[in-house]
Image (cartoon, rainbow, N blue to C red; front, side, top):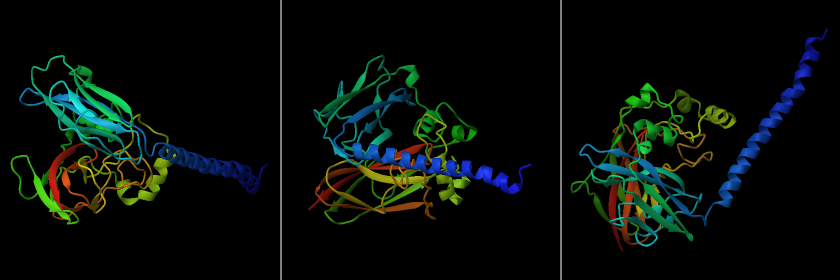
Length: 323
């Protein structure tokens, strides 16, 4: 008969080996991610991406585009022209000229008329010597709805839905202050902070998981040790507002530092796709206050995205910066 001491001894070695295996697994995962980020920090190209389309209430259609900047750090500026254009028709369809790192989904939409038919709309980008084109059509398998958006961005597993996701309504972002119709313009001098106040109204769905609010470190460890359960990148649900440069060149500083709207999956990356990220507290009055400082004169477009994890709403501010 094996006594309790010999039984404990029999299991101690496998347990130690298992712990060692976990340490090695974490090290290998961390090393692989770091190696990838080091390899692709800069010098890579941009892949424009056609995300899909939806029909508007007036019978027109919206083509939705995003992009994948292969770089982990380099943010490329590509002016409208030979290296950043649409065809046929107007080469400027409201696309970004400042490209954030990595995968940026559902970044902007282009409205086409109701009689578009089976034509293609092409978005071409040349960056770091590489030319890539995205082709948009009204193919039925590219129809986009709220569940598709939540699924593709990682709020849901690919091809799944839930009563909560189907009931979710996108947050509503409203920039406070003067505007002319849909146009919001601000003027500021170099080095002078621009004050942005914006209200975000949301229905509270999808609800942040209780674990992500009360046990961030424990949950983060569990997520790092758990194999992926979906083919899309995982995202933590929770309301946030993020301001970023959409058009314009020159150093720009945001205070407080903004949450990344792109899929940065590294730990502590201030990104909803990072393992330890938790949603920030919502201001008591619902007003988000941000200071933006420009180092160089020029005309900039700021892009604000209110995101509840599953759905989003965008606003844009044109800023004219003088000396």
